[in-house]
Image 1 (tube, rainbow, N blue to C red):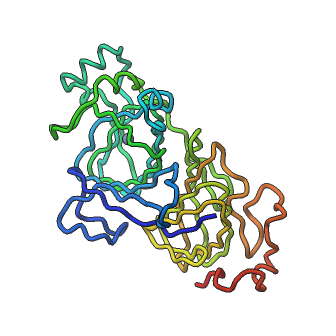
Image 2 (cartoon, protein in one colour):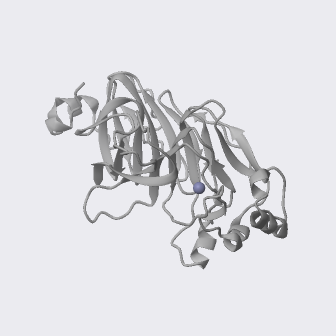
Image 3 (cartoon, rainbow, N blue to C red):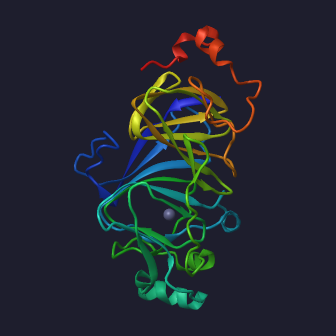
Length: 319
Ligand SMILES: [Zn+2]
């Protein structure tokens, strides 16, 4: 059982930003911050299998590719990396690159990395706030300047760089050629509304990503059966005994948590370890039941007894 306000680790990057508002209050001290990693706070807690980050870009990131689990295992790594991006903000014209404009053979890909022409071959797409991009392992990708992105990924260091815009960091040609799907990316799957409050953004073999939108001061219960990250992207809420504001994340595992949406409502990303959306993820505790397509399980507290004091008073959310 776990239920924690995530700690935040700021990571300097040459392509990062000194302006993290309104997503983070971390003082950049003039240094460019590229990433904020959300981490478990409890000492000795096992590392989550999913890593949640914020990315802040003022320059393009390297063109890169990640291996799948099988290739990662073959080089002694614990797992590969499939990731998904949620665009939190985008300057006009901001773009991401996903896949290539045309199919290349392995020798063509190798020479395109070696001579730098790969930079002309990646397929850029403009993106806007609230768009979602799924990046399965093996997809050649890059992120352009002017973006703030929430990224959920298999926790892994396995990144193979194909091009670095003159920044002189190491390229990984052999591994990149070995793992890349050197052609156009598959079409992105459109978001799917699950209930009034839930939209499914990504269902992958490694994680499910949803966006939840809860009306002002409504009262809910979140059932986190497995490792679950909740990131506030608009409004605020009280989650269990913790307040959560924009840019803050809560980590839950094998836990039921009461959520009281704030005066402006709550919009949050919820990412969890599963391959399909969980029917029992979210139940409304006041008003009519809008959200559960399945009957309540026996563990679901009756709303009247729950508010009448069967739970410690401190878990009751307050506006
Ligand atoms: Zn990546």
